[in-house]
Image 1 (cartoon, helix red, strand yellow):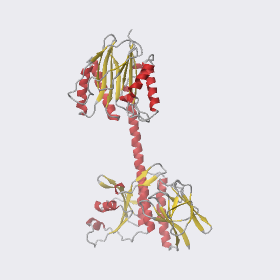
Image 2 (tube, rainbow, N blue to C red; image 1 turned 30 degrees about the vertical axis):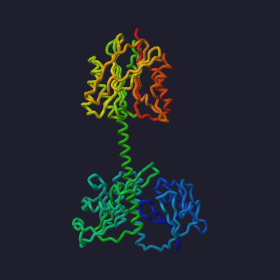
Image 3 (cartoon, helix red, strand yellow; image 1 turned 180 degrees about the vertical axis):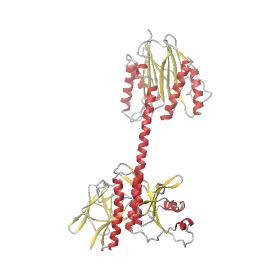
Image 4 (cartoon, helix red, strand yellow; image 1 turned 180 degrees about the horizontal axis):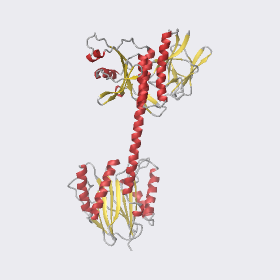
Amino acid sequence: MNNAALDVKPPGASAFRVPLDPLPFTIGRSPENHLVLRDNRTSRNHAIIRRDGADLIVADAGSRNGIDVNGLKEQAHVLRHGDVIRFGVDDSYELTFLLETTTAMPTHANHGGLRKLRSMLEVARSIQGALSIDEVLTAVVDSALEITNCDRGFLLLASKDGLETRIAREAGRRPLTEDLGIPAKVLHKALRTRSDLLNMHFDSSLDGVDASIVKLAVRSVVCVPLIKVRAGDLSETALVGTIADSIGLLYMDSRLHHPELTANSRDLVQSLAIEASFVLENARLLDEERQKQKMDQEMRIAQTIQQDLLPAAEQYPQTGWLRAAGLSIPSRQVGGDYFDILPAGDDRFDIVMADVSGKGVSSALLASLLQGAFIMSTAEHIPPAVILDRLNRFLLTRTSGEKYATMFLASIYRDAPMRWANAGHCSPLLVRANGNVFELAATGMPVGMLEVATWKDAALRLEPGDLLVLYTDGVSEAMNAQREQYGVERLVAVLQANPSLPPAGLIDAVKADIASFTGGAAQRDDLTLLMLRYKPD
């Protein structure tokens, strides 16, 4: 009798045939469909084939890209033998509608089909049972052996040293202890050719047959490349099909000379290889996720440590002749900005702000090293320019000029002029009580660049009510969605508009103004501020 079927040609894989049973017959990306399309460009429920009297009709099921029949966009179409159905995108699945005549299969063929079906169900049961990766892969190899009637089966994965055996089994679902024994060049041939299924026969009487194969008495080999898969989310996964994307082989051999595999057997083995590829990809993604979680945890710890190295709120002078507040927001979990304020007796404070080149962990580690070197130097009451010279030599010794830092150092006295030096850092702002603003320009180049670099100290007498503002370029170069920079002018405007605010209040005002300007846009650099108000008795 006449039965309807579809010849299915997936992208990058061999064709297979499916009967149109049951009806209506659903097609789409969702696993609940009768024909599942492993292409994330197709819709979850893309098309349906239903009976209308004596006719079969294919119809669009409300898909994103629609359906094409014989090259024409259709909402519904009465199918005729040979009609070709596509899914609205290039290089996707291609279905050919067939009306075929079937005859009853011999009894022994039915038994073979049931055995192969049982093998596939074993794999499905292993996957659904959430067993270990090796148990699922073992089920894949066992099923492949039953389908191909081969004696030995190996699942081999590509590594930097070639191919390594992950699973070795023999017929009868038993572990195999012997080595593969097949030369790598034979197996690499399968990878190079990227055949969907490579079926080889060896006859020891033929010239050119490798001696190792003769010794093993291998007559038939079935070799299926395992390929990478690219996963988007759990419902969208696509195959990747270039030579470089082969990740291994599903290999079976036999000491008997078998005829060519039937079309159904080839399709089943190919399906097993694809399932193994998905299992391996899921394992890789799981391992990546675990590594990412571990890295994230370590970065959170590093972020906590770095924040703890900055002055705590209670460590800023809140009363007395100098009052201060600070803020540092890294653009990543850790950053390369650093600042500190250290009391040196009752009449002096030493301050520093540094911005290490680059981003991330390496810059954060170097900022921590600079902090230690600064604390040790200020304990000796060394002038700022001498400290910069020491830090320059320290950085050159440790980084060979590959990392540098801009720095501003100052010693602020109750009754004497402030002594300071600026190593290429953003010019701090001195806002006088009358509203006038001065910039403390660089007195030398950044530290860590050149051995011959020199710095000079400068002196400046602070007046009652003066505000000293230190910042990094993450403040002045903060960007909005139009890629406009915040700029020093906006910073000055906020400071002049709030002359009576204490340092902590000014920090909050500037932070809010930057947030309003950037509109929540992600920033490329760390944002650091330190404000100090001079209020002598």
